Length: 233
Image 1: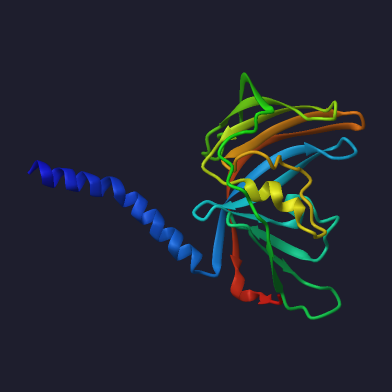
Image 2: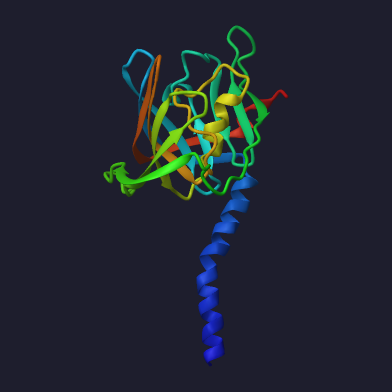
């Protein structure tokens, strides 16, 4: 009897993992995606004005969705409709050309995220903590740990607040490396593990400063159906 109870208990504990694996398998085999979270940061632009950068997330597959108006790159990229960032390094770009065929088209790009397991030695924890976010939509606040970063051959001074989270942020930090017009207005650090989410940065250098801070996560619904797009290369 005890043996049967142990087997039942193990099965009960493993069932959610099995369900999640099945959900991931089904999601990967579909052409339809629903991005149900929106992550929002506030930053100061080159003129010192405050602006928001909003990025969508699909939590089952850990995909990120960037749209020109929400993510803040409409001024540099007028043709792109959206980008999907996958944790394996694949980037899907949807666009429409003006004055030509109005068909919606799809292009695939490739980035090469590295699986880092720890922060570099020049990231030094200060022991200070701070909470970011807002609980109005049911998501908890995120606890940030402060780190000071020093760079060789410069006098730049940087302080970050990072939080550990069950996400993969590597592709957000690498996106601006693509040789395309679209660029995120916030450049996240590329030398940290993907499960560290940058909540804020304050960098002072001779020509100015970089400042941004995480605002909150909210529920949303943004649907993408890849079957509506023609892959061109």
